[in-house]
Length: 179
Image (cartoon, rainbow, N blue to C red):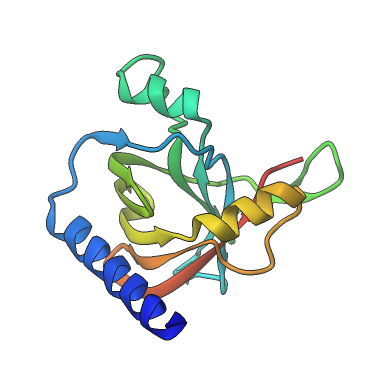
């Protein structure tokens, strides 16, 4: 019986992802009440040229609602965005003694959609180029990681990522809630 349920669940997940991929991505929307806030780190590491993908960030519910209403938009931040590091740029030290690169471009969305367990993103940056992502959220794994407050050891989001024409299939993202 459990094999049958697992097969049905897998079929529904694939159908949902296929439907989400067919619907053109436009505008900014989310339909959930779950807090997805966090920093999602790629697993494994992803590089395109001199750029390394640092994280996929999702803001708070309030940030999503405000952004989607058109208020409070900034040229350097969106509640759904990708952040990269230019590994050839100068390394600097932060107040905690950690290092970071001086050039850290952010890819802000031209559109995003969070619907059920699916997430889709499209955006661009003059240095990085066009970035798209279409994936699924493992809500049970995310809630378990959030409950511990520790970085997840396994991906909680998985999908296909394209950066400047280069596609990475089945990329996983581990969750971290921040310090």
